[in-house]
Length: 223
Image (cartoon, rainbow, N blue to C red; front, side):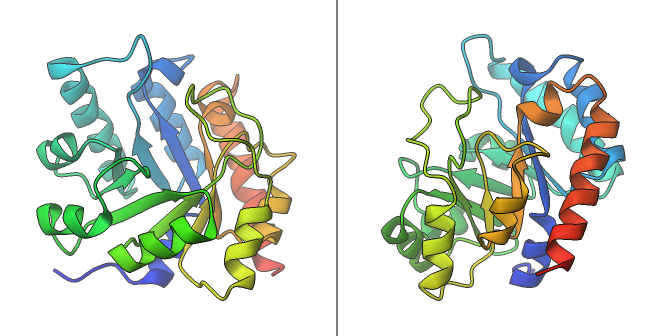
């Protein structure tokens, strides 16, 4: 199978939901189902934190969430863990700067899987592209409590720098993004936004997700 083309990746990044059991107010299955019905376009299973599931529990939850994604025709991405991604036959993986480079992951998972890489600077972005990343996750744009090891907040400056440097790779902004502060991220040049707590912790998940989806549709159409 061939790699998904960049325009399809760009479309998938529009509303990228990231979540694990530790992020949810409701059950993970109910949370993801509501978000899927609300209009997310991509999902990443990120099971991290002091109370995160491990071993067979994490694998079982991954299988449940993958099934929900596929029922809604939403690609299922795994955070960091190459072995888990392979075990779940995930549609792709997202890795950080301290993980294996994309070229080694590609050798293991195959050409048809989506590979995303976190980048916090132009140099990191250029290296990820050279290694064969399909998209970049850039941030944290705003302060976030969802990651204990988050990098310093950078606003939209890095996204703007990537675009002004001529890089056309699909980019998704991440970190503290809400319905209210999302527009500058898209206007800076991102193809979409990644959201954890603004959806997972929402009182009305489906309604909140729809608000994000409508806003992004409007912002992207206006570029």
